[in-house]
Image (cartoon, rainbow, N blue to C red; front, side, top):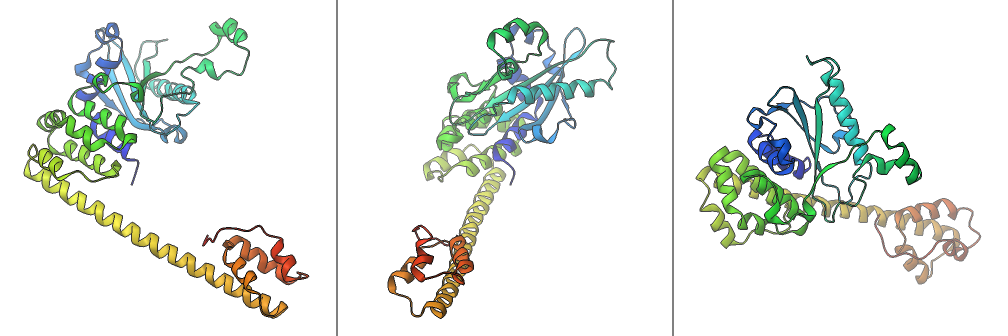
Length: 339
């Protein structure tokens, strides 16, 4: 399964209405007035390289200026527990590739579209890595200051959900709920979040229908470490049409069965590893008995504590060992392991 955070972000912010609400709340008001947000168009992101694709949600948009030309908006979600320290460089690469793609489009000579990348971060701790390209330069600060007019600069447009109060989270209905859930994903209270904001879920259902609503609920089921209470399920389901309830329950059953299967597979894997470990120990004991005679109980107990790698090493060394004591003294004591 691909990253559930990316899945949620794409599902909700592929809608131009959600993107317009995000821009209205994040861009400076003076800039918003110059944009025609009713004419947003989705754009392909085929020019993104693989190193950036690992972070980017592959969402790009063209937003016209009211007086001609357009802004190219890229949406990027950073969900790593530690933000990428080279994010300004990654955003610069994205900007350059967007400009290269614009070369093939009709445009006034000597003019480039504005490229803005909005970074949405929802890690467990606030953003702590560079926010500007100039912070990455390996030079004395006074040199950078003097050379600033001649150096490329780019500052991140960053929405750090970690330090944003719930009331200040941008967007409307589905977009706001998605960002709230991303903000709370590390706190394991996503069910409480969706319960508190059921009005946003209902507004999303009215405006976009059942599919995005299902995607919200699937995200919550995927990232939550606990099941919702019966009271919460009743509160949620009273607002949902029958087909959404049915799909939600079907998905919940699938997740439960998948979890049970993963547990069974882990148990089988552990059993195989334990059996293999036991076979290695038995082989080593038989070889040592052939060389040194019956093993004392302390030696057998010691062998049981060794991991697979150490046992295989002893099997290779046993043929030339001068004594049992010298062989076993060459390895440190370990806790029992099957790996």
